[in-house]
Image (tube, rainbow, N blue to C red; front, side, top):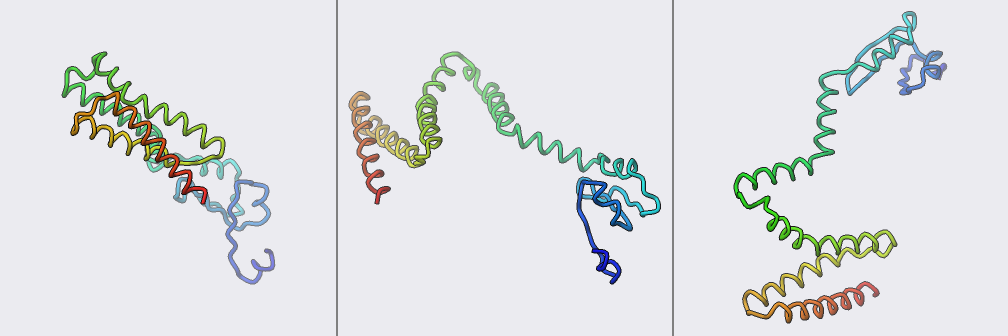
Length: 175
């Protein structure tokens, strides 16, 4: 590197290790949060000054921190907003009967999700189960609503449809 410097070449080194840089530099430019926060010539070297340049907090950094927090908690924030909006729009939204109804509707997806978690963790990844369950549920809903089929008969048909679809998926995935 010294030969390159003697030939007039510029070398840019990026490091967080001060001793590594000390013997090789003519000038130090410190970047923090995507902007230059300080510059020092070799004659003015002060490790404390360089560290103070590196720890400068800017408005840009504060905004970036806010973005990280919003990104991390966005789904929870969206859920809270939805709950507030529906609570204001519909007085029965937060009643026990409505919350139990929502829990009942979500329970099947929850059970399927736990099952899929085990399948994925054990290495037998098959993400088609969710789409098969959804398709069979839609077919059964149409049979009950449009054709007036009894829910018990629809449930038996649902189980049969799902079983047949899973056999087809297994057949196609094997080969």
